Image 1 (cartoon, rainbow, N blue to C red):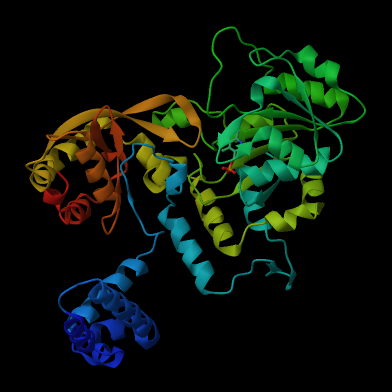
Image 2 (image 1 turned 180 degrees about the horizontal axis):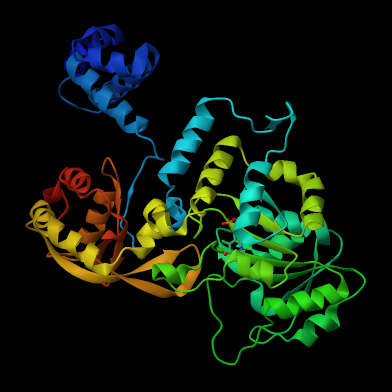
Length: 469
Ligand SMILES: *Cc1c(COP(=O)(O)O)cnc(C)c1O
């Protein structure tokens, strides 16, 4: 027994023998000598342990080389690689929100590859301003006098509050002290900006007189927050931005209106619900308006602050601005995205966010019908697949109560709920993960955001369904 085990241990190939085997050629070509050696050593250590624990035969050099290849290949797969978003949520925060327009992608790639005149004035040959490129565009699209760009809207709110309310009062309605998710809680952001939070009104009703009564010489800012991700219904009152702007102007303090998503165009023109536009918010008289780049606007992650020239200038002088600024790649993508808004007629074709949101149910239903036979075959016999109607969500806190009619496939299991969970997990492990949602005992794949049906089928066909049921 003991001598047999020793003999098997002696049969284990050496590191060199594995690396010199025919099967190792592919391993070395793909991962190089250093990583391959580390992988082979680890595989040999495991094989040795297995033999000592009673395994009967030593693996061959060829087998080990193949094993290490598949291990390194699995490790090498990017966790940030593309996925199929079949969740039905178009602007899915956990899946990276907006998909960029081709023009923005091209601009970002070129800014990555080559030097650009980021802070260089090509006319004078002197130092320029990095935000200037997009400032003019933002002003013409919103009617604001000036604009600045930071990392995201959370940064925009933080920076604006810190500039005007550090050590001073920031007045806000109790109905607007929101949590967005992902640790964005308005009271916490206000506190970190150094603001002394002065809550006014009640959860459901806040009046103009509540703001007026709170105004003091120490007031630095009045804050209005778009309650993006929830609605208070019933016996409610809020003070609209125009009235608040008048109150703020009287008191000579800036009104900061955090629109959250915001949009640069009237979405009703594309068959969507009305969402406050930045231009409207500027016209209502807010000194400062903040909004996100990667929500309804459909660009890369960014936070925009637009408003009065002197207020924006004060924000740009805040040393925090430097810590929150945007890099050249994103600025290039932002500029290209904003330029698309100059031609609203072709916006829905060019901007994926808008195209996906405006895609009509009949079109999606047709895709579901086309995919049904193949998906049924891939998942047979343990899973049953049906075309279903479903509701897509916009996501990222825009229109929390409104969904838009969509369609897809609903998968149910013949053998119970656990099989469905296993299937969902197996779909998430595919070379391009497929992410649906489990709803009422069925795995629903909403096809609103599916563009390449052939690719989807070819990825899905790698599923090993027999192992799941
Ligand atoms: C989404 C949102 C934010 C945060 O914006 P990010 O771009 O995600 O940082 C802030 N305020 C409101 C009202 C929002 O909806």
